[in-house]
Length: 156
Image (cartoon, rainbow, N blue to C red; front, side, top):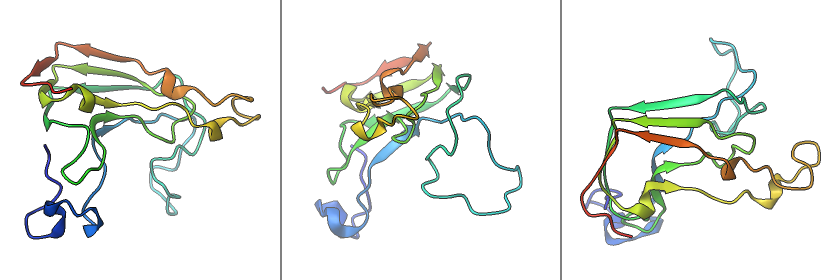
């Protein structure tokens, strides 16, 4: 299991209030949007940074190659927070891009910690966006695993 912090503080003892207990993810899925900002920014980006500021683009693709992910032995961290190798962007209501993972190794990764997906929240049901139903991007994820290796105990 990935330790959250060193033994010099309370988090090592499972104290989630120590300020060092965070959700962990190795890949937070990218968002590709229509439009964007100037290459050289002239002002601060609005928060949160991972929130798309325009409609999703249907042509985005992400490629991960020759990478190893190790020791995600559980879907929770040492102090009880969520952890996963791959996590959907929780602000990406329009489109989750196609992902291709090629020559990726998963060493000692539990099935439950491989990916974190979620149902679209009811707050995503906006008449001018997706109508009376929540936008369904989290239900339309495509990932292609090519030449990947899964080694070590996989705990469920």
